[in-house]
Image (tube, rainbow, N blue to C red; front, side):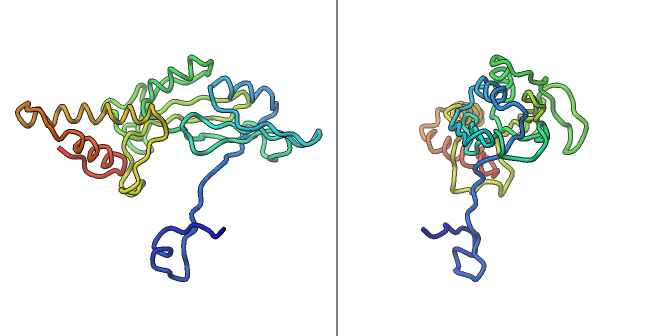
Length: 218
């Protein structure tokens, strides 16, 4: 089967097409495979595989809920020092809810914090305006590999194809619908409180624009 090609090269047939590359797996270095398996399983991550070949090779794969990318750890899969994987991003649509869910499953998650500016100092609590990309929390696995939760509700311009709107989970879709409903309520207020009979089209326009990082409808 030939490679799938995207981008201007694929569209125009130029000599330098761009191959579609999908990040599938991130390798996590651990010292105790069974301990790591209990930890990630305890978080509610899906166990996809646990394969061994003799005493020198074993690979375990987990996938976080809603994620297209999985993690591998095991024996004979990496020479990196256990605990050396740092600040692996987990994107969430509601930082407080995600933190609470992880804490309920036994993870030692930091308090939520935010930054007042890109690269600036951290401040306790979620971003007061709940701006996308600005609210965080962290936790470690038993080896010290660290994970960073980041709340993203609207992508930066150019980050998402404006014609390709997807949601990783029912929870993400529900959260997007709630934000659209809140914004639509304000839209109706600005129009004298009259019910908008065309609300499905408004919702669709809002949700696509939000995910693509474009100007939101008023």
